[in-house]
Every structure is written in C-alpha cells, then in structure tokens.
Length: 196
Image (cartoon, rainbow, N blue to C red; front, side):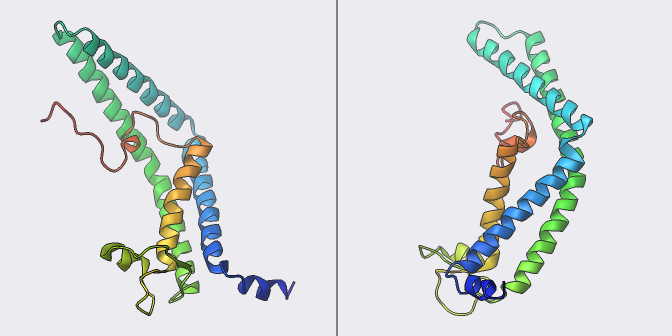
C-alpha cells in the first residue's frame, strides 16, 4: 500500500484527476443533502406538480391565443394573467423552499474549496490548451507564480468541474428545476412582454 501512493503521485495527471474526483464527490454529497432536505418532501412534490400544471396550462392558453388571432377577449387575457401570477407565486415559494438547502450546500462547498485551496496552493494542476483572454487568465492563473498563461490553478478547474458536474448530475437524477419555474430560465430569463 505504501508504494501505491508515490506511484499515484508521480502520475502526470494526478492533481487534475484529484480535483475532478473531489468535485464529483462534492456534487454527489450536495445532491444527497438536497434530496434529504428538499426533493423527498411532499411540499416540494406538490409545488413542482403545481408549477408543471400551471406552465402547461399557460402554454396551451397562449398557443390557443396565437392560433385564433381574431379578437383577444379580455376574459382570456385575465385568465392568462391569473395563471401567470400563480406560476410566479409557486416559483417564488419553490425558491424559498430551496433556500435552506442552498445554505447547507454553500457551507459544504466553502469547506471543500478551503481544503483544496490549502492542498494545491501555488500548484499548477492543469494546462489549458489555449491562451485565455485577460479576465479568464486572472481566474485561471489565480495564486500561481510564473507568466505561463496556460497554467491552470485548482480554483479555476474546481469551478469549471463543479458547475458542469453538478448541473449534469441534477439532470441525470431528475432534480433539475421544473420547466416553468424561475430557475429554469437560466441566468438571463426572458423579459415580461407586458412590462415593456
């Protein structure tokens, strides 16, 4: 067993694979925490089903509106507004419901990041296959000595892995946000046409 550690340490990609592996394990732990605190509860299931129903109903109402472009009745628009407001309210409730799990997950991520930062401080863990632009270079070269812009620090690799692994793991496990919720729109949701 004692010979296995130096052998692994001399492996060319050992640091990179260690960061990726820890990122994958952290994503599993975070999703397990989210499952315990959120996804297995009845209130989450009811909120998710109400969001799904409301978004489907809103979608069918809007497609009916566009297919019959003769005259848009006020009662129809009021119904659409009512469904939209209930969808927004359910999405808000779902976001508040996920907040407690988000705090615990953030704490886990901060602890793991601090641990990794102390293990790989000032150490190049990967080489980028390109020369990044200035803003990306500042993130990817954070805490490293030298001028080689293709050197990649642990922080940058961990950030990329955390984002991609956790998102794909959520989709694989079926924990992605419902279609009509606020989280499903991404960072830049579509603006409301009525406010413009």
